[in-house]
Amino acid sequence: MNFEEAVEATVTRAEALREIARHDIGEPDPVALFFQEVGDKAEYTGAEVLGWLGY
Image (cartoon, rainbow, N blue to C red):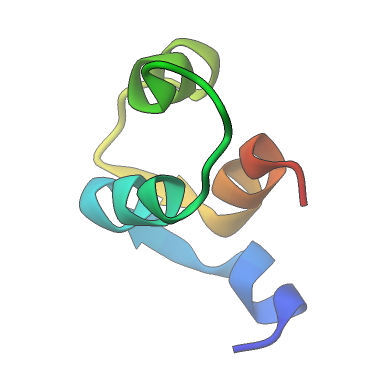
């Protein structure tokens, strides 16, 4: 999957959390921070996850 496809994708909560776990963002609880900033939802857009990760 290329970047454009990833941005347009819809991912489940579990998939988003797995992707966050793959990145060492230096936060003590990145999941809590993600939920605080993006929200705790059943699905996310790729843009939300990638944007939060800094891509």
